[in-house]
Length: 151
Image (cartoon, rainbow, N blue to C red; front, side, top):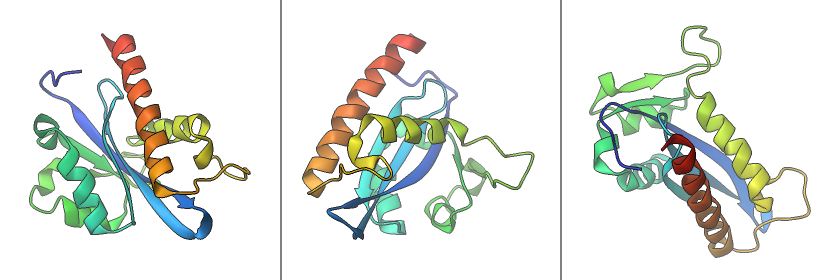
């Protein structure tokens, strides 16, 4: 869906692995708060470089919106050029608690929709290619469903 003026963005990461748990990967998700569409995702490590990679994929109008994140320090480094644009939501803070709930719900939907992400399952990604392909397919259909819902 197109950017319709004021929106907010939620940024979060989700753990998974490829072939064995020692091969950890992190799925970075950028979500529009207005229509719950995934604006960008990236599979990589849990570091600043991966955060920068997913942020570069976010369409330009959304990069100027307010960004909600959890307390992970990488987000502060990523958004240091625009500190007033960044809202850290700590789980223990009653004023900001729940601001990142929409992306947590999306993470839950990802875990249910992509068998590779299910915890305690016999299904797991045997290659990074297939993990990315399944994520791409699921997110494409997720965004179509959200577009119909919020049209």
